[in-house]
Amino acid sequence: MKLVIAIVQDKDSNRLSNALVKHNFRATKLASTGGFLRAGNTTFMIGVEDDQVEDVLSVIRTNCKIRDQLVTPVSPMSGTTESYLPLPVEVQVGGATVFVMPVDRFEHF
Image 1: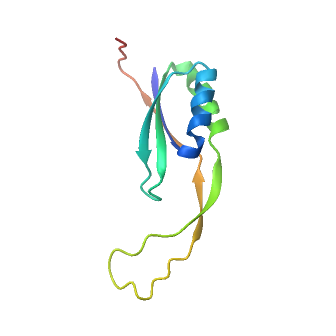
Image 2: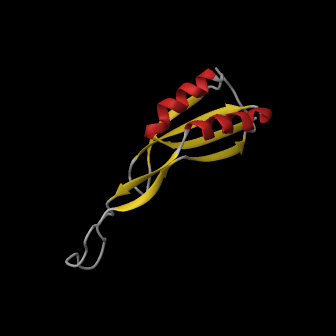
Image 3: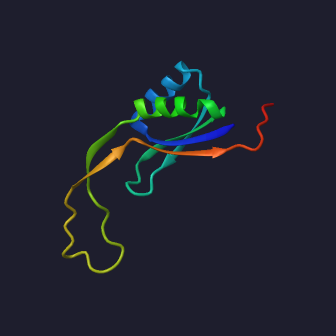
């Protein structure tokens, strides 16, 4: 058995949740916040059998898309801010960060 932890952008959360249900994968959703952009994310915890890992990864890959977004950088923590001009920067967001971990024991009560 494996535990798949997928961190996805909130914009992809509902689409992924619906797709997981459609493909009979049970998941737990947790609200989370990204450290880089400080934007809302959703973390999915999905328990699957070893032979289902590629199937669940395919569902995640299909429903979580990378997109470009303009963000304004946070002001510097130290030094003067007199010469700091926070110009928007284009960064890639979205997609999914996925961890697959072995499960030694699973109980359902």
